[in-house]
Image (cartoon, rainbow over all chains, first blue to last red; front, top):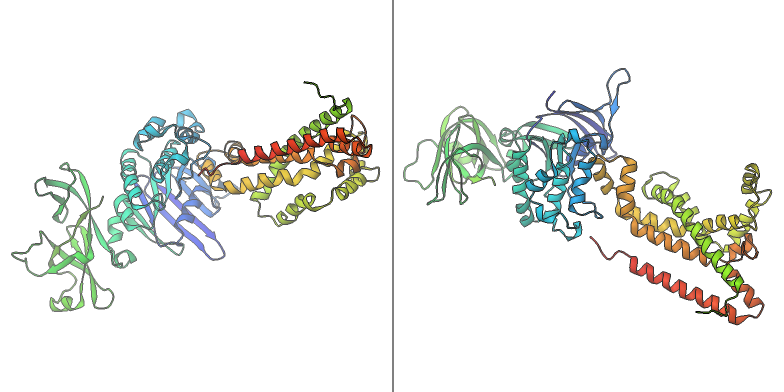
Length: 362
Length: 227
């Protein structure tokens, strides 16, 4: 059976975790929520580092089943759950060099179960020059890359990552991020990624679980959840819709990238080289989308998309959050209550979304 | 080089002292590693009392330790009963008795550096090892123990040095039998009693030099801010 199923219950004096997660068995799933919401506890319970009650099954392998009938209840200790875990701090073994750190998990795995080679892990994370170095001579970003490679080299059935970038400064984050993306694209290992950064989630995750106070508030496709007006993600100042499209054209002279998606095309400035057909994620902030009844002429705004209003929700004093359907993709617009009344906007009506700000997520 | 001032019985005392310290250190490391591990990681309510008992030899006068050990090893003591039941000779005034006394006397000097080293390494490296497929014993020998190496070395050096410097406990339970229980510190005492100050100087000066070297070794072996 494919997929990851985790039903976990754990009670502490000041906190209770109670989740029932049905997650895809491939790609990146983000566990997202404010600090203290139980993301890390949930991940640790999945790994068997915390003793929670319930059931855990990962792509067919049952790691834990406390309610199995007839004395067949089981709880595998962490070292028997073939998983990879990347902690917030790299936590390399200080008494081993990079290569021996990476071989630690690999050597404990029977040869016939090895699906990732040491060379592959070294290449993916660009560690070729660091193999003989000791952990204390590495930079923070390098250490975290070694930790990721070490987890990968153990050929895990699932890779659990607990805010692997949170302890790094912006420059180190930017250094590690491309490796993370490459890793997800290259290997067919499902990843559970704990984060409290919406940016990271938008960039990496296809699937999203929203946690709050130890419970899963919502789970589903990242783009769909980010644009749902009833969830807190669409309520923050940085609320944005995620548009998944492909490169249609790239004008190198004007640095203008044209991205096609279900609702039409969006044009965005990008200095990077792009290949036609390449998948692109765009982030369209709600505050940068305005609405018009008619197609404006002589405007500097490049992006005008026909869309249908699906939700109108009051959003703070004097503001209205509008959810729009643009050919199957949800966009968000934050407009003033006054404009909403003047245009007499209503659910189901056709409008033009004027998109002033849009950014490639990378 | 000739050392005319050290008589054969001085050399015998030195050999006996080194033998006692060596055996005691080996026993202490074997005994204290699991004990220190337990103290570093347990949440048991016995942690406090056990820690206090382990530290008692730090504050008790050696004569008190020696007195109770002598009573316990005697015909009516629990150690005496045990040695009788096993068909062994009684321990007072024997070399094995000295070893038991030294182990008790130097216990905190082995446990505390080990415990601090295990605590400093923390649980995280063990968790990482578990996620990489290492079972409990595997984790202990490949991660916990190597990370605690500075503590292990400190524990060994301190145990050895402290046993070499032992006097009160030895006199209480070992007496002063040449070749069996007469260690260097007792030999010095005998020389002084007999007004043989020159010979006392040789042994006492040797102890000063030995202690200095030990402390320098400890200083050099401290890990120098690796992190």
